[in-house]
Image (cartoon, rainbow, N blue to C red; front, top):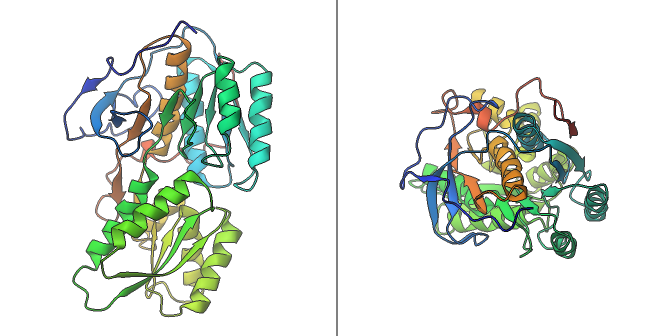
Length: 362
């Protein structure tokens, strides 16, 4: 590393309103991209500037970047995978990815990251299983001179170098507000089953808080809140149990995996027209569900872009270039009014993309 890089000046402030994104987000033309930059990095409640993100054209050398994900069991993480893979290829760096197999496997993630660093990784990008559980490891890694970038899920560690993520509290709030406004004139309460995801994960706790706050005082009655791993079988069982306990349910709201599992179950039981489904993040299954009128809506956090930004942050830190410490794409809700016009390539991996674990510079 070439000393401590400065933050932000290479970005151009564009004011309070986001500019329209490019219609495509492929490797050579995904940027500039409208993002939020937290004025107090790592403080999710701080004010933000709206800026245009511009990555380096090429890395000065083939840095070895290790990427650690909780799992690759759903299409959301496949989208982030595509972002880090395609950006590593574009910038000319080496990338190795490990995945822990699920949110119950914190020790696996810790050992995988340790192995990455021991094998010579120059930087580590982490989608954390636990908000607090990686802090000691991150401290040790940072003290050894290896920067750690927090991607998507969030960590409480003060020793990370950068964050490429959005507020999942706002993601939950976005869909909560959407639902509350949809029924603001109803005379009767609307009964909702809420499935925020794996207990203990930072993004889940934030998403739950945001959703619950958004619907408080509205016509939305959250009759059941059920946590669980984002595997389809786990979420399907949670939805089944909730339907048994609350046969008069009006909506199922939760993770993308919950939404995808729920649409199949409701269709099998002939309940598609009786119970609405919403997700608080975006995947190909949610995309198809909205197009087919099986899912009402979902906010997108442009998962592909988060992956791209994290790779660029790592390169900039390693090369001593100016970088933004805390970046997140702007959030917006997708429903039947904009499903055919939004920037699909910023949120979803291409249909032919398969999980990829290594990138070697050409």
